Amino acid sequence: MDNTGPLAERMRPRTLEEVVGQEHLVGEQGVLRKALTGGILPSMILWGPPGVGKTTLARLIAQQLKRPFHALSAINSGVKDVREVIEQASGTGLFARSAVLFIDEIHRFSKAQQDSLLGAVEKGTITLIGATTENPSFEVIPALLSRCQVYVLKALVEEQLLGLLDRARTADAVLSESAIDLRETDALMRASGGDARRLLNTFELCVISADRTPNGVVVIDNALVKEVVQNNAARYDKQGEQHYDIISAFIKSIRGSDPNAAVYWLARMVEGGEDPLFIARRMVILASEDIGNADPNALLMATTTMQAVQMIGWPEGRIILSQCAIFLACAPKSNASYVAIGDAQAAVRSHGDLPVPLALRNAPTRLMKDLDYGKEYRYSHDGEGHFIDQEFLPEKLSGTTFYKPGEQAREQQHRALIERLWKGKYALE
Image 1 (cartoon, rainbow, N blue to C red):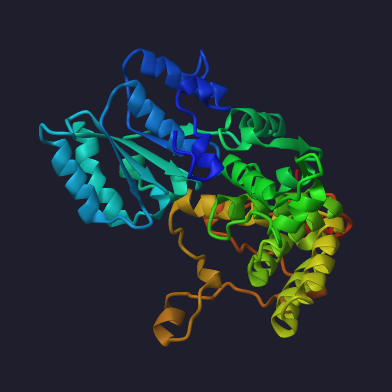
Image 2: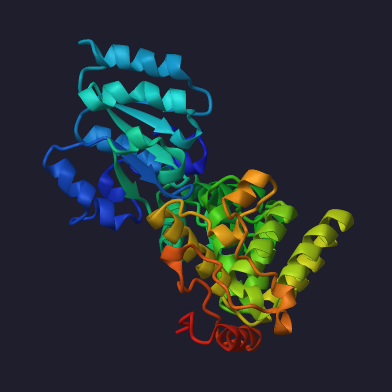
Protein backbone atom coordinates (compact mmCIF):
# COMPACT_ATOMS: atom_id res chain seq x y z
CA MET A 1 0.00 0.00 0.00
CA ASP A 2 1.28 3.48 -0.88
CA ASN A 3 1.85 5.36 2.37
CA THR A 4 2.80 8.65 0.74
CA GLY A 5 -0.69 9.85 -0.29
CA PRO A 6 -3.18 11.68 1.95
CA LEU A 7 -4.95 9.69 4.65
CA ALA A 8 -8.29 9.69 2.80
CA GLU A 9 -6.64 7.97 -0.16
CA ARG A 10 -4.79 5.48 2.04
CA MET A 11 -8.07 4.59 3.77
CA ARG A 12 -10.09 4.24 0.57
CA PRO A 13 -12.14 1.00 0.77
CA ARG A 14 -10.75 -1.92 -1.23
CA THR A 15 -13.94 -4.00 -1.16
CA LEU A 16 -17.68 -3.33 -0.95
CA GLU A 17 -17.64 -4.71 2.59
CA GLU A 18 -15.33 -1.87 3.66
CA VAL A 19 -17.66 0.84 2.38
CA VAL A 20 -19.02 2.93 5.26
CA GLY A 21 -22.71 3.74 5.07
CA GLN A 22 -24.88 3.31 1.95
CA GLU A 23 -26.44 0.12 3.30
CA HIS A 24 -29.47 0.77 1.07
CA LEU A 25 -27.17 0.35 -1.94
CA VAL A 26 -24.38 -2.06 -1.02
CA GLY A 27 -25.67 -3.83 2.10
CA GLU A 28 -26.82 -7.45 1.90
CA GLN A 29 -30.24 -6.35 0.68
CA GLY A 30 -28.98 -3.27 -1.15
CA VAL A 31 -30.25 -2.66 -4.66
CA LEU A 32 -26.77 -2.34 -6.14
CA ARG A 33 -25.49 -5.40 -4.30
CA LYS A 34 -28.32 -7.47 -5.76
CA ALA A 35 -27.65 -6.15 -9.26
CA LEU A 36 -23.95 -6.92 -8.99
CA THR A 37 -24.64 -10.41 -7.65
CA GLY A 38 -26.71 -11.03 -10.76
CA GLY A 39 -23.97 -9.65 -12.99
CA ILE A 40 -26.14 -6.68 -13.99
CA LEU A 41 -24.65 -3.22 -14.33
CA PRO A 42 -26.92 -0.47 -15.67
CA SER A 43 -25.66 2.98 -16.54
CA MET A 44 -26.20 5.11 -13.47
CA ILE A 45 -25.87 8.47 -11.79
CA LEU A 46 -24.52 8.44 -8.23
CA TRP A 47 -25.93 11.50 -6.49
CA GLY A 48 -24.81 12.57 -3.05
CA PRO A 49 -22.89 15.13 -0.99
CA PRO A 50 -19.09 15.34 -1.13
CA GLY A 51 -17.04 12.67 0.57
CA VAL A 52 -19.59 9.87 0.84
CA GLY A 53 -17.87 7.42 -1.53
CA LYS A 54 -19.18 8.04 -5.05
CA THR A 55 -15.81 7.59 -6.76
CA THR A 56 -14.88 4.65 -4.55
CA LEU A 57 -18.18 2.92 -5.25
CA ALA A 58 -17.74 3.35 -9.01
CA ARG A 59 -14.29 1.76 -8.89
CA LEU A 60 -15.46 -1.11 -6.71
CA ILE A 61 -18.43 -1.81 -9.00
CA ALA A 62 -16.12 -2.17 -12.00
CA GLN A 63 -13.72 -4.25 -9.95
CA GLN A 64 -16.47 -6.56 -8.72
CA LEU A 65 -17.61 -7.31 -12.26
CA LYS A 66 -14.05 -7.33 -13.65
CA ARG A 67 -14.91 -4.57 -16.11
CA PRO A 68 -12.28 -2.28 -17.68
CA PHE A 69 -12.50 1.07 -15.91
CA HIS A 70 -11.75 4.53 -17.22
CA ALA A 71 -12.28 7.78 -15.34
CA LEU A 72 -12.73 11.31 -16.59
CA SER A 73 -13.27 14.50 -14.64
CA ALA A 74 -15.82 16.91 -16.04
CA ILE A 75 -13.62 19.78 -14.86
CA ASN A 76 -10.80 19.10 -17.32
CA SER A 77 -12.30 16.74 -19.91
CA GLY A 78 -14.21 17.54 -23.07
CA VAL A 79 -16.06 15.90 -25.95
CA LYS A 80 -12.74 14.82 -27.50
CA ASP A 81 -11.80 12.85 -24.37
CA VAL A 82 -15.22 11.19 -24.25
CA ARG A 83 -15.02 10.16 -27.91
CA GLU A 84 -11.55 8.68 -27.46
CA VAL A 85 -12.81 6.46 -24.66
CA ILE A 86 -15.85 5.41 -26.69
CA GLU A 87 -13.66 4.56 -29.69
CA GLN A 88 -11.41 2.41 -27.53
CA ALA A 89 -14.43 0.75 -25.90
CA SER A 90 -15.69 -0.18 -29.37
CA GLY A 91 -12.51 -2.15 -30.08
CA THR A 92 -11.08 -5.34 -28.73
CA GLY A 93 -8.24 -4.05 -26.58
CA LEU A 94 -8.22 -2.82 -23.01
CA PHE A 95 -11.57 -1.10 -23.42
CA ALA A 96 -13.83 -3.89 -24.53
CA ARG A 97 -17.55 -3.51 -25.13
CA SER A 98 -18.31 -3.87 -21.42
CA ALA A 99 -16.03 -1.02 -20.29
CA VAL A 100 -17.11 1.30 -17.48
CA LEU A 101 -16.71 5.04 -18.05
CA PHE A 102 -16.76 7.01 -14.82
CA ILE A 103 -17.31 10.77 -15.08
CA ASP A 104 -16.79 12.70 -11.88
CA GLU A 105 -18.83 15.88 -11.42
CA ILE A 106 -20.91 15.08 -14.49
CA HIS A 107 -23.14 18.07 -13.68
CA ARG A 108 -20.30 20.28 -14.97
CA PHE A 109 -20.57 18.78 -18.47
CA SER A 110 -22.30 21.03 -20.99
CA LYS A 111 -25.29 19.83 -22.99
CA ALA A 112 -23.02 19.11 -25.98
CA GLN A 113 -20.67 17.07 -23.80
CA GLN A 114 -23.55 15.09 -22.33
CA ASP A 115 -25.03 14.59 -25.80
CA SER A 116 -21.76 12.94 -26.88
CA LEU A 117 -22.46 10.11 -24.42
CA LEU A 118 -25.96 9.24 -25.60
CA GLY A 119 -25.25 6.89 -28.49
CA ALA A 120 -22.64 4.83 -26.64
CA VAL A 121 -24.81 4.52 -23.54
CA GLU A 122 -27.87 3.49 -25.55
CA LYS A 123 -25.94 0.88 -27.58
CA GLY A 124 -24.17 -0.47 -24.51
CA THR A 125 -20.73 0.38 -25.88
CA ILE A 126 -19.96 1.76 -22.46
CA THR A 127 -21.61 1.59 -19.08
CA LEU A 128 -21.72 5.12 -17.73
CA ILE A 129 -21.33 5.89 -14.07
CA GLY A 130 -21.69 9.60 -13.39
CA ALA A 131 -21.06 11.18 -10.01
CA THR A 132 -22.69 14.43 -8.98
CA THR A 133 -23.31 16.51 -5.89
CA GLU A 134 -26.14 18.31 -7.68
CA ASN A 135 -29.71 17.27 -8.30
CA PRO A 136 -29.46 15.37 -11.61
CA SER A 137 -32.96 16.41 -12.61
CA PHE A 138 -31.58 19.96 -12.87
CA GLU A 139 -28.08 19.27 -14.18
CA VAL A 140 -28.27 16.16 -16.41
CA ILE A 141 -30.07 16.41 -19.76
CA PRO A 142 -33.34 14.44 -19.87
CA ALA A 143 -32.21 12.19 -22.74
CA LEU A 144 -29.18 10.99 -20.77
CA LEU A 145 -31.02 10.85 -17.45
CA SER A 146 -33.71 8.60 -18.96
CA ARG A 147 -31.01 6.09 -19.90
CA CYS A 148 -29.55 5.92 -16.39
CA GLN A 149 -30.63 4.69 -12.99
CA VAL A 150 -30.23 7.32 -10.29
CA TYR A 151 -28.89 6.12 -6.96
CA VAL A 152 -28.85 8.51 -4.02
CA LEU A 153 -25.94 8.26 -1.58
CA LYS A 154 -26.75 9.42 1.94
CA ALA A 155 -24.66 11.75 4.07
CA LEU A 156 -22.61 9.93 6.69
CA VAL A 157 -23.84 10.26 10.27
CA GLU A 158 -21.59 11.12 13.19
CA GLU A 159 -21.35 7.51 14.38
CA GLN A 160 -20.03 6.42 10.99
CA LEU A 161 -17.55 9.30 10.86
CA LEU A 162 -16.24 8.45 14.33
CA GLY A 163 -15.84 4.86 13.19
CA LEU A 164 -13.66 6.08 10.32
CA LEU A 165 -11.44 7.97 12.75
CA ASP A 166 -11.03 4.91 14.98
CA ARG A 167 -10.21 2.74 11.99
CA ALA A 168 -7.68 5.28 10.70
CA ARG A 169 -5.89 5.38 14.07
CA THR A 170 -5.44 1.62 14.18
CA ALA A 171 -5.40 0.43 10.56
CA ASP A 172 -3.40 3.11 8.77
CA ALA A 173 0.28 2.21 8.50
CA VAL A 174 1.39 5.78 9.21
CA LEU A 175 -0.98 6.84 12.00
CA SER A 176 -0.77 3.52 13.81
CA GLU A 177 2.87 4.27 14.59
CA SER A 178 1.76 7.13 16.88
CA ALA A 179 -0.11 7.03 20.16
CA ILE A 180 -3.12 9.28 19.46
CA ASP A 181 -5.36 10.52 22.25
CA LEU A 182 -8.56 11.68 20.53
CA ARG A 183 -10.03 13.61 23.44
CA GLU A 184 -12.64 15.70 21.62
CA THR A 185 -14.28 15.32 18.23
CA ASP A 186 -16.86 18.13 18.01
CA ALA A 187 -14.58 20.48 16.06
CA LEU A 188 -13.52 17.68 13.71
CA MET A 189 -17.16 16.90 12.97
CA ARG A 190 -17.91 20.56 12.26
CA ALA A 191 -14.82 20.96 10.09
CA SER A 192 -15.68 17.91 8.03
CA GLY A 193 -19.23 18.97 7.23
CA GLY A 194 -20.06 15.26 6.89
CA ASP A 195 -17.39 14.80 4.21
CA ALA A 196 -15.35 11.68 5.06
CA ARG A 197 -12.47 12.72 2.82
CA ARG A 198 -12.23 16.12 4.50
CA LEU A 199 -12.55 14.53 7.93
CA LEU A 200 -9.66 12.11 7.43
CA ASN A 201 -7.36 14.66 5.83
CA THR A 202 -8.11 17.23 8.54
CA PHE A 203 -7.46 14.57 11.17
CA GLU A 204 -4.08 13.73 9.64
CA LEU A 205 -3.16 17.41 9.45
CA CYS A 206 -3.99 17.79 13.13
CA VAL A 207 -1.85 14.76 14.02
CA ILE A 208 1.07 16.24 12.09
CA SER A 209 0.62 19.68 13.69
CA ALA A 210 0.06 18.57 17.28
CA ASP A 211 2.71 18.79 19.97
CA ARG A 212 3.67 15.53 21.67
CA THR A 213 3.34 15.03 25.40
CA PRO A 214 6.52 14.06 27.28
CA ASN A 215 5.67 10.39 26.76
CA GLY A 216 5.07 10.89 23.02
CA VAL A 217 1.25 10.95 22.96
CA VAL A 218 -0.49 13.04 20.30
CA VAL A 219 -3.44 14.86 21.87
CA ILE A 220 -6.28 15.92 19.56
CA ASP A 221 -8.85 18.29 21.06
CA ASN A 222 -11.23 20.97 19.81
CA ALA A 223 -8.77 23.82 20.39
CA LEU A 224 -6.14 22.17 18.22
CA VAL A 225 -8.59 21.48 15.41
CA LYS A 226 -9.82 25.09 15.43
CA GLU A 227 -6.25 26.32 15.31
CA VAL A 228 -5.37 24.05 12.39
CA VAL A 229 -8.55 24.68 10.44
CA GLN A 230 -8.72 28.44 10.26
CA ASN A 231 -11.82 30.20 8.95
CA ASN A 232 -13.69 27.01 8.14
CA ALA A 233 -16.63 28.43 6.18
CA ALA A 234 -20.03 26.78 6.27
CA ARG A 235 -20.47 24.40 3.34
CA TYR A 236 -22.79 26.18 0.96
CA ASP A 237 -22.69 26.02 -2.83
CA LYS A 238 -24.44 29.07 -4.29
CA GLN A 239 -24.87 27.27 -7.60
CA GLY A 240 -25.74 23.87 -6.20
CA GLU A 241 -28.65 21.98 -4.77
CA GLN A 242 -28.00 23.16 -1.22
CA HIS A 243 -28.59 26.68 -2.52
CA TYR A 244 -32.13 25.62 -3.42
CA ASP A 245 -32.65 23.50 -0.31
CA ILE A 246 -31.73 26.28 2.10
CA ILE A 247 -33.75 28.99 0.40
CA SER A 248 -36.64 26.49 0.38
CA ALA A 249 -36.24 25.93 4.14
CA PHE A 250 -36.09 29.72 4.65
CA ILE A 251 -39.28 30.39 2.70
CA LYS A 252 -41.16 27.50 4.32
CA SER A 253 -40.13 28.71 7.79
CA ILE A 254 -41.54 32.18 7.08
CA ARG A 255 -44.69 30.66 5.56
CA GLY A 256 -44.97 28.51 8.69
CA SER A 257 -44.75 31.62 10.94
CA ASP A 258 -41.51 30.53 12.65
CA PRO A 259 -39.25 33.60 12.99
CA ASN A 260 -36.52 31.63 14.76
CA ALA A 261 -36.14 29.09 11.99
CA ALA A 262 -36.36 31.86 9.40
CA VAL A 263 -33.45 33.73 10.99
CA TYR A 264 -31.41 30.53 11.27
CA TRP A 265 -31.74 29.70 7.56
CA LEU A 266 -31.06 33.35 6.76
CA ALA A 267 -27.86 33.09 8.78
CA ARG A 268 -26.86 29.97 6.85
CA MET A 269 -27.17 31.92 3.62
CA VAL A 270 -25.36 34.96 5.01
CA GLU A 271 -22.46 32.79 6.24
CA GLY A 272 -22.35 30.97 2.92
CA GLY A 273 -22.02 34.19 0.93
CA GLU A 274 -25.42 34.09 -0.75
CA ASP A 275 -26.37 37.08 -2.88
CA PRO A 276 -28.43 39.33 -0.53
CA LEU A 277 -30.58 40.54 -3.42
CA PHE A 278 -31.53 36.94 -4.21
CA ILE A 279 -32.79 36.58 -0.62
CA ALA A 280 -34.62 39.90 -0.82
CA ARG A 281 -36.30 38.99 -4.12
CA ARG A 282 -37.59 35.76 -2.65
CA MET A 283 -39.10 37.65 0.29
CA VAL A 284 -40.85 40.04 -2.11
CA ILE A 285 -42.45 37.04 -3.82
CA LEU A 286 -43.41 35.46 -0.49
CA ALA A 287 -44.95 38.70 0.77
CA SER A 288 -47.53 38.50 -2.00
CA GLU A 289 -47.85 34.73 -2.36
CA ASP A 290 -48.15 33.77 1.32
CA ILE A 291 -49.33 36.95 3.07
CA GLY A 292 -51.03 38.97 0.37
CA ASN A 293 -54.01 41.02 1.46
CA ALA A 294 -53.97 39.58 4.96
CA ASP A 295 -51.39 42.33 5.54
CA PRO A 296 -50.66 44.48 2.47
CA ASN A 297 -47.82 46.14 4.40
CA ALA A 298 -45.83 42.93 3.98
CA LEU A 299 -45.25 43.64 0.29
CA LEU A 300 -44.26 47.23 1.09
CA MET A 301 -41.86 45.94 3.74
CA ALA A 302 -40.28 43.41 1.38
CA THR A 303 -39.84 45.81 -1.53
CA THR A 304 -38.42 48.46 0.80
CA THR A 305 -36.04 45.85 2.19
CA MET A 306 -34.75 45.07 -1.27
CA GLN A 307 -34.17 48.76 -1.99
CA ALA A 308 -32.51 49.29 1.40
CA VAL A 309 -30.13 46.36 0.90
CA GLN A 310 -29.11 47.84 -2.45
CA MET A 311 -28.44 51.22 -0.82
CA ILE A 312 -26.74 50.02 2.35
CA GLY A 313 -24.68 47.12 1.04
CA TRP A 314 -22.92 44.46 3.09
CA PRO A 315 -22.53 43.46 5.90
CA GLU A 316 -25.12 45.82 7.43
CA GLY A 317 -27.69 44.67 4.88
CA ARG A 318 -28.03 41.41 6.81
CA ILE A 319 -29.75 43.33 9.64
CA ILE A 320 -32.37 44.65 7.25
CA LEU A 321 -32.94 41.15 5.82
CA SER A 322 -33.35 39.82 9.36
CA GLN A 323 -35.90 42.50 10.26
CA CYS A 324 -37.93 41.75 7.14
CA ALA A 325 -37.78 37.96 7.63
CA ILE A 326 -39.04 38.29 11.19
CA PHE A 327 -41.81 40.70 10.13
CA LEU A 328 -42.98 38.35 7.38
CA ALA A 329 -42.83 35.30 9.64
CA CYS A 330 -45.00 37.03 12.24
CA ALA A 331 -47.47 38.51 9.73
CA PRO A 332 -50.94 36.96 9.22
CA LYS A 333 -50.93 34.54 6.29
CA SER A 334 -53.14 34.19 3.23
CA ASN A 335 -52.51 32.63 -0.16
CA ALA A 336 -55.89 33.76 -1.54
CA SER A 337 -54.33 36.03 -4.20
CA TYR A 338 -51.93 33.26 -5.26
CA VAL A 339 -54.79 30.76 -5.55
CA ALA A 340 -56.96 33.29 -7.39
CA ILE A 341 -54.48 33.92 -10.22
CA GLY A 342 -53.79 30.20 -10.50
CA ASP A 343 -57.48 29.39 -10.83
CA ALA A 344 -57.97 32.23 -13.32
CA GLN A 345 -55.08 30.97 -15.45
CA ALA A 346 -56.59 27.48 -15.35
CA ALA A 347 -59.87 28.92 -16.62
CA VAL A 348 -58.04 30.66 -19.47
CA ARG A 349 -56.33 27.41 -20.47
CA SER A 350 -59.59 25.49 -20.20
CA HIS A 351 -61.90 27.91 -22.03
CA GLY A 352 -59.48 29.59 -24.41
CA ASP A 353 -59.77 33.20 -25.53
CA LEU A 354 -63.34 34.01 -24.58
CA PRO A 355 -64.63 37.19 -26.19
CA VAL A 356 -64.58 40.39 -24.15
CA PRO A 357 -68.20 41.50 -23.50
CA LEU A 358 -69.19 44.29 -25.89
CA ALA A 359 -69.92 46.65 -23.01
CA LEU A 360 -66.30 46.41 -21.81
CA ARG A 361 -64.63 46.88 -25.18
CA ASN A 362 -62.70 50.00 -26.07
CA ALA A 363 -64.29 52.10 -28.84
CA PRO A 364 -61.77 54.63 -30.14
CA THR A 365 -63.14 54.64 -33.75
CA ARG A 366 -66.52 55.29 -35.36
CA LEU A 367 -66.63 51.74 -36.75
CA MET A 368 -66.20 50.26 -33.28
CA LYS A 369 -68.96 52.45 -31.91
CA ASP A 370 -71.22 51.36 -34.77
CA LEU A 371 -70.52 47.77 -33.74
CA ASP A 372 -71.79 48.61 -30.23
CA TYR A 373 -68.36 48.46 -28.60
CA GLY A 374 -68.78 49.94 -25.12
CA LYS A 375 -72.46 50.71 -25.68
CA GLU A 376 -73.90 49.13 -22.53
CA TYR A 377 -71.05 50.07 -20.22
CA ARG A 378 -71.98 52.21 -17.22
CA TYR A 379 -69.36 54.31 -15.44
CA SER A 380 -69.07 52.82 -11.95
CA HIS A 381 -68.34 56.13 -10.24
CA ASP A 382 -71.78 57.38 -11.31
CA GLY A 383 -73.45 54.77 -9.10
CA GLU A 384 -74.23 54.99 -5.40
CA GLY A 385 -71.12 54.18 -3.43
CA HIS A 386 -69.17 54.20 -6.73
CA PHE A 387 -70.77 50.89 -7.70
CA ILE A 388 -73.13 49.70 -10.44
CA ASP A 389 -74.12 46.05 -10.79
CA GLN A 390 -73.01 44.93 -14.24
CA GLU A 391 -71.20 41.97 -15.81
CA PHE A 392 -67.41 42.12 -16.06
CA LEU A 393 -66.62 38.49 -16.95
CA PRO A 394 -67.15 36.73 -20.28
CA GLU A 395 -70.68 35.33 -20.46
CA LYS A 396 -69.44 31.73 -20.19
CA LEU A 397 -67.67 32.49 -16.89
CA SER A 398 -70.37 34.66 -15.32
CA GLY A 399 -70.48 34.11 -11.57
CA THR A 400 -67.20 32.17 -11.46
CA THR A 401 -65.33 32.81 -8.21
CA PHE A 402 -61.53 33.05 -8.37
CA TYR A 403 -60.81 35.11 -5.26
CA LYS A 404 -62.00 33.57 -2.01
CA PRO A 405 -60.97 35.79 0.91
CA GLY A 406 -59.29 34.03 3.82
CA GLU A 407 -60.16 34.22 7.48
CA GLN A 408 -57.73 37.03 8.34
CA ALA A 409 -59.24 40.35 9.43
CA ARG A 410 -58.41 42.37 6.31
CA GLU A 411 -59.65 39.68 3.94
CA GLN A 412 -62.81 39.31 5.97
CA GLN A 413 -63.42 42.97 5.11
CA HIS A 414 -63.03 42.01 1.45
CA ARG A 415 -65.52 39.18 1.95
CA ALA A 416 -68.08 41.52 3.50
CA LEU A 417 -67.64 44.01 0.64
CA ILE A 418 -68.10 41.35 -2.06
CA GLU A 419 -71.14 39.89 -0.34
CA ARG A 420 -72.72 43.34 0.11
CA LEU A 421 -72.13 44.50 -3.46
CA TRP A 422 -72.69 41.31 -5.41
CA LYS A 423 -75.44 39.80 -3.24
CA GLY A 424 -74.48 36.15 -3.58
CA LYS A 425 -73.36 36.23 -7.22
CA TYR A 426 -69.95 34.89 -6.19
CA ALA A 427 -69.77 31.81 -3.96
CA LEU A 428 -67.08 32.51 -1.36
CA GLU A 429 -67.05 29.15 0.40
